[in-house]
Every structure is written in structure tokens, then in C-alpha cells.
Image 1 (tube, rainbow, N blue to C red):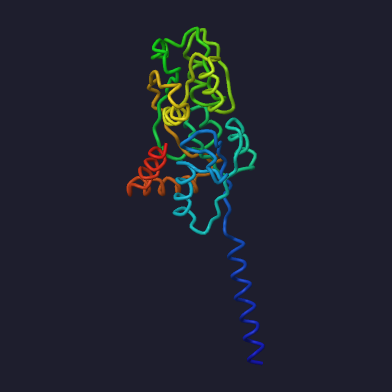
Image 2: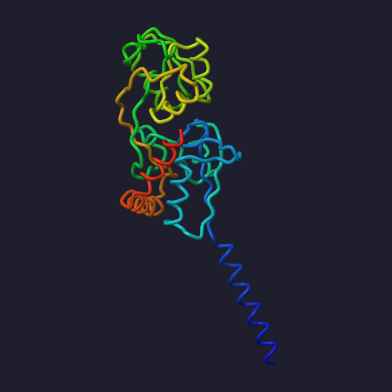
Length: 248
């Protein structure tokens, strides 16, 4: 009889253990790995970058038992996928605009960015947003550069790309006069051209990057904000940004 009780006890322990494992949350995190150094495909074929390190560090605080799965997709598919439940979280160097706030919840900011104007290395004629008037300007579809040029630059011929690297390649090839994109990836793209392109000027937009969640995610958003505060105060976010910027 004692052996039977021991066997039953062992079975119950295993059942509870398996139940606990089954209850561990899985968060599918959407991103667009065409935005170095925030997200890109590394030499090992895995998505890496500032945002990947930040979300992993953050979720280790918010839900230590959870699994974080990174899902790659086009930038303009991220918020629709969030709305339909295909993904649970978006972190993709995404600016928390008022328009986007109508459809998603955003955490507090974790990074502040401006827009850079990329031009060919020998071009000194384009240094401000006003200089883009009448030019052929490359932007990434749905990025802040796309929105800014569309709303603020008169008579520009806007060429929209799915990938920033493709726009920069067309700039170097002479098919574009300029590319407008966030300043951190702009520096990365300039480095990748081997001196063929440069940052001609900065547009001070001061947009904030934040993490997007489905509307009504009040509890999760509050936990993530607490986690972001901790990662900011203990220097983790600065260390992550420095790690990837220095690697460029």
C-alpha cells in the first residue's frame, strides 16, 4: 500500500509539474529585421539587434517563465497582425505616433530618434528638409521618414521600399537623390556603403520608440513600463544600445 501511495504521489507531482509548464506563457513578438542596428538578421541567420535584446531583458522581468518568440514580417504588416492576434507584441523601432495610438497601446518610450537625410558622398546640395523639394527621395514604407516626407516636402517624387538597404543601394547607384530614414539605422547603412554615401543632414523630429500592444492591454502595459523603468535606471538599455552601435 505504501508503494501505491508513493506511486500516486509521484504521478501527482509530475502532473502538477507538467501543468505548470503548460501554463507558462509564450509571447510572439513581431518585428521587421530590416532596420539595423535595432533589428536585423545576424551572421547565424537569427534576428538580433537592440530591440531583440531589450524585449528579452524586459520579458525576463515581466514574466520570467515566459518564452519569447521573434516573428519577422514586413513593417506595414506589424500592427494589422497585432490587431488580429497573430502576434502579441511589436518592437521594431516603431514611433509612438498619435495615429498609431488610436489602434494600439504603447509602453513608455525606450529610445528617442530623429530623421537622417542620406545622400551620395560627393553631394553637398541636400542638407535640410527644404532641400528635398523636387528631388527623388527614397523612404521605407510606413516608416517615419515616409510619413514625414509625404506630409512636409513639396513636390518630392517619393519612392517607397520594403527595405532600407534597397533604398540606399539605389541612392548609391544614382537612382535616388536622397534617402530619409531614422538616424541610427542611417549610420549603419552609411557604414555599409564603404564611403559611397553620407548623412547630409538631420531632421529634428524627436520621435519616441515604444513597444506596441493590443488595445486594452492595461495590465501587461503597466508591468512592461515598470520593467522598462528598471532597465533604464540600472543602465541596461544604454548598455544594449552602446553594444550594437559600437559594433557598426
